[in-house]
Length: 332
Image 1 (cartoon, rainbow, N blue to C red):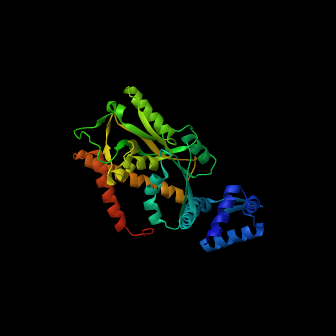
Image 2: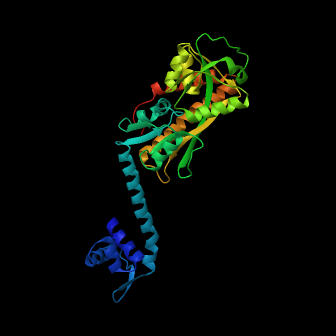
Image 3: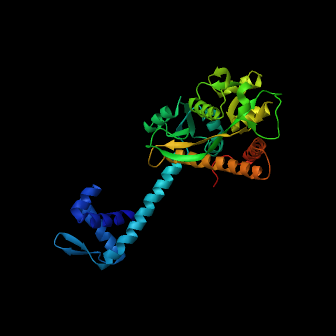
């Protein structure tokens, strides 16, 4: 018995006869009939009642239908798995970001994936807003989009990754009261640098400050977050930066404080409805796992009494140390 014989057998069952089965499989009727006769000889059983030119399943044939379907289904599944394995060895993933979800952050989250699949190229682009990013994903120009939520469309699948925390990052040497969070009502006299491109984030910060009756003192408007951090480190202004950049600024000497009320924005990945290709699907799973691991460790350290910044610094150090000891390439 071989797979082709089972395929012929099921085609006759599902298409109601030799003629239609042969047309479906694009083979000659004689070839199909010969294959069925060979199958019956090997099984030492007749599978059909033959009434003139018609074939009707007999009891033995009925017993074979479900096992044959399972065998061919398993073969198709195995072929899909192997096709996915081949696709994971080469190719590329197109990823879009927005200013609030900077390319630097996405590149950091992709580190585990690139270590596991070094031959998969990541093509990373940044778009001015969530709307333009979503349009690019809907059009198929980007397979994945990293964005803050909500998004301006219901036509994309969402994978929530967590909540982005903004901290106030101040120039080195800035005196602060370390007994608690920095009250936003004290921000009136603090010069700020804001990113022109992070429009959604600016709207969120402005809305929160308005509720606190605070009019921010804008010292500088710059193109991106890296320019914000440069101004902070040079002592020109303070800035609201996400936790990952805040920890980097702290390591360079900046003073980082939590605020009250806190500023939080949910974020995640969007993609078109339907199954992702294996590389993109693996990227989503790996990003989700890495962020969940980091967030869980930060939460654990905070529960033990650590401040958010200290917990993030410790978690990043531990995860970086673990990365350096991990083997490269897929693990068997």
